[in-house]
Image (cartoon, rainbow, N blue to C red; front, side):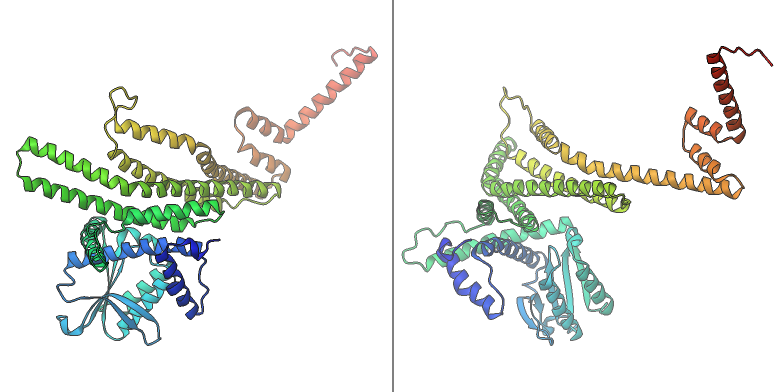
Length: 487
């Protein structure tokens, strides 16, 4: 259990003077120090991500130049308070209708997001226009409640409510534009703050960026492990993916800046290529310092994902074994869904890990001539073989669920077919016992089927009984020394 004294002075002031009193004023119980630090990493990541996307839209759509005001508070008639991401006053719009923009580049779920939607619904009832801008690739993370509310607003206010979806090409352009301007703003803000210090010397010191957030979060993960606390996998997943998105945008900006510097030299082609390669390697080296802690978060996340998958697969097999011991019928659809869900999740983890390895390989130097690995492709193949071998037992358990569902389905279909044949034979007047055997005969191959068919024939059974009786009588006569001739 952490103590405020374990925090840095700035963190301690935020926790004791702002966060704690704010929670108590709302009648809520503040998180403990450790939980607050865990949550703080998510807040910081989410805040930087959201702000970067919003500033990117300012640049790409020219919102500030058009008079849109950022982060405008609004209180609904119900008393609910929200912050409108961008607002354009009625006097500045061409049609005289005030407009609002809500930017959601991630998930829409939870009470806070629903409160935002309710606040915009209040805006719509007042005749204002609302534009919801989303990232198309993240629509799968919207809650059912959020999807239903968005659909309701679209249907109820078709002229005022509009959803704009950013595809990945547009989103990456927006994120890159936002990253450029946010970097400038952070540097300027740091210079301004340092200038207010007495005899400030480090005016060009870099601000705390996503690499710092990643390192802080890794420290908290390590502490949580040591203390036996569990960091939620959803939280870790969110932090990793968000920091990775921002990290990639920063790399693209760094490479673009390097290219601008190269072009400014006006060199000939071959000299140009040498300078281009040198600048690119410098940008990748600098970027590696930021990426490394994010990669480490990725390793932690993928390990946790695998543990969760393996645990779920083992539990599914345990339930199947228990059902069989108790004579209960298996829920085939449930087993099939477990197989599909676990398989899809594992495929997603593999894809994320492979992408991380590919990005790591681009930062690797060329292998030495005497190295057993002659190319980055071979390094990637080696990593794939290692992970495949590590996951072999878990994958076998997941695949086993699909095989169990398949075999159980086939067995049930066979039983149903047998019963149908049996019913049909009985309806045609056949003895029920014979009908049952004939129904079974249909399911048995080769000689076994022919044997069952013979045994099912009443005349055949009579002949076999007579022959058996004759053999037994001959054996008794032989033992008494009587030899019977032909009758």
